[in-house]
Amino acid sequence: DIQMTQSPSSLSASVGDRVTISCRASQSVSTYLSWYQQKPGKAPKLLIYAASTLQSGVPSRFRGSVSGTDFTLTITSLQPEDFATYYCQQSYFTPYTFGQGTNLEIK
Amino acid sequence: QVQLVQSGAEVKKSGASVKVSCRASGYSFTSYLIHWVRQAPGQGPEWVGMIHPSGGSTTYAQKFQDRVTMTRDTSTSTVYMEVNSLTSEDTAVYFCARESSLWVANDYWGQGTLVTVSS
Image 1: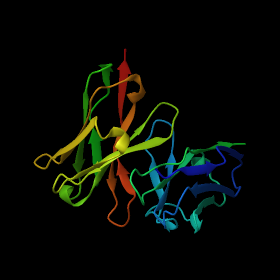
Image 2: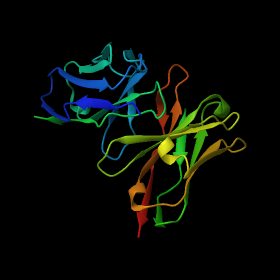
Image 3: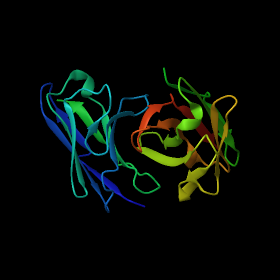
Image 4: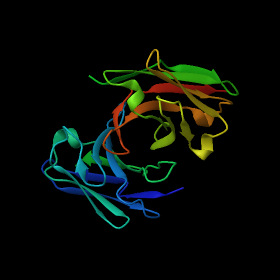
């Protein structure tokens, strides 16, 4: 199975900050990488697909990028509603594995 | 609007089976793959498998190959996932999710079904 390694596992930031979350695949997944946001007791919400394409309705402060097997989710100017847990997921080979998550907390 | 509505919470004994349903509405049911993802308490999501409602073809994670069966009923736009030989490690919230038409990503999700397995 492809391993997805996210970092950091937790992150404290303030409203207005710019934050970066990383996700590394254990082998090439091309651009078959998505980012999800999850809030407690809720289903994950799709933010980014194909590594860098913004899902419809998602604010433009969310950006995805890729360099080889390294993927990055950047949130510019954090808003109060952005404090949540973020997961990456590869969908290149089954099983479609997730990263272990990054918990973004208010500083 | 697109909706996926799942069946209610279940409590099962070890060794039993559970069948969770996911009823789709607001789109062409047979045109989109449905994935199942589970999430144990305090853990990240785990992909279980997927089904194409059109022909019923399935792909399961090898970990679940022998214990999971996904089916669909096109007359009611419902997909089902049955898990057999439950253990406490199967205690989790189970989500169904539609695969986007644009990419292999899940754009709509059910509300989740908590399955609790007790000994």
